[in-house]
Image (cartoon, rainbow, N blue to C red; front, top):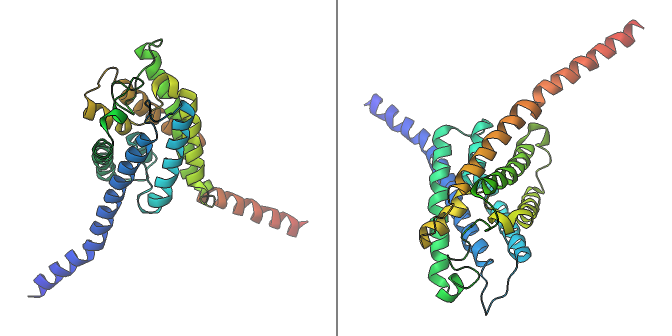
Length: 266
């Protein structure tokens, strides 16, 4: 009887942690769905709705800001497998949790774009400016696939460097404006590279429109570029720039004690 009670108690003790993990994954799913729905809605352009690269870039930046503000405290609001990969390399989440994030992002992106197709008229999804479908990331005709992959690699590297700077232990006290920083960063990178590759930086963001519209031309670029950029950038930052606060504080404490001792002897 006592063994049964202990077993039930152990299960009960594990339940809050399991519920917390479910909450985290669900929040990531909703946040990614919100990114796709609101972000891609802001990219609609046809004879009735005017748009530009500037407007689309700014819109995506603001949507990222909203997603992080809403769900950043719950799940970190990665919204992006590349960010999750960097987070895992940075030793901030376990491998099972990273896989759960990836699944949530892919499902959330699929749902978000599907909802957009459900509520928007076909003329808003397909037009002369977006014949493959609104928000489908495509390579400019003047670029080769390799050039597109390098562009995605570089802009994703910049994004991940920002992430690593935010995650750096030395920056722990400066988290109040994180949504604004990320929103402006996404807007800047989208303005810079949007006309060339669509400035995806996010495999989930490119995958959902591709699967809903069957548009797979040069799709590999939006997996290879962002994931390679995340891998390289996070490894460089982790081993070249990251410093643990505890070690730094211990060093400063040792130096302070040494100075005090020198003054006492003087």
